[in-house]
Length: 313
Image 1 (cartoon, helix red, strand yellow):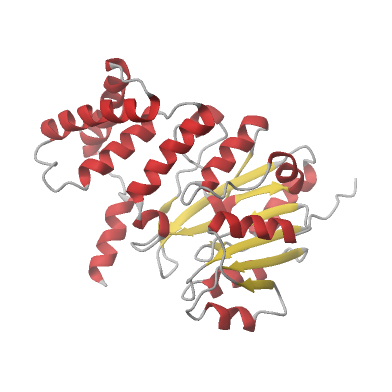
Image 2 (tube, one colour; image 1 turned 120 degrees about the vertical axis):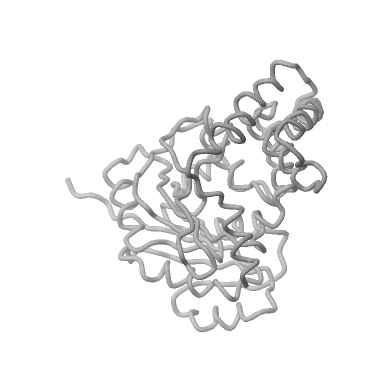
């Protein structure tokens, strides 16, 4: 059997990422797969982004003009593109060598597969690996509790976007998570246990720098998409609220009590119901596990690593 060659459309939304965008571009252009069309949708950057884009004009299509945000930019790229497989990578992330070759082989050998996702790493500003991204095998139920898909390591067929739509432009932080939930409700994703990409994270990174707002939006999005938020996301949002209060962390017991009360409030706020059982599960499943018996286990705290690096600069 002769496998049909896969054509990729790669879309990069960009804004004020002149320090990183050339590395993103090179990671695309250096792929072994040559059946690639590449679009960079810049939101009118005033740093050196445009000068970088001009240097690579022979190899990609780009525009630099005001837009309505990241989701709007990706949707513009979708409308401009023609390839069978859509790849979306932000302007501070990178693909690893041979990533497209691995993805292409899976798609070509499995014509019924519509979405492929692989493993990835969190990387710092110098491309050093901070830690592996916590990816897992496909489980839609688990996806509603945690976003274990790393956005640049996800590839999907154009037919999926045409049938189920593009990104929700009303979202500022979790537009990728909403897309995976929407697609995952209709079709299973195929897991490729290969490192495909590096997702850059640093103190001024959009999502990391606005964690509280990002977690609130995730809870609101889950309510709109699923009809309710999950105790994992309510817990994480409540914990971030407390951690932003310098007076909150006195002892584990006091912190646990305050978190319990705040979880009740947020359960009611997001889900319009607040039961003791739900909140007890939050404490038993999350707080106890993270603050007590896991304390003795060696584990990288991504947020602490990033903030420590920032302090050393």
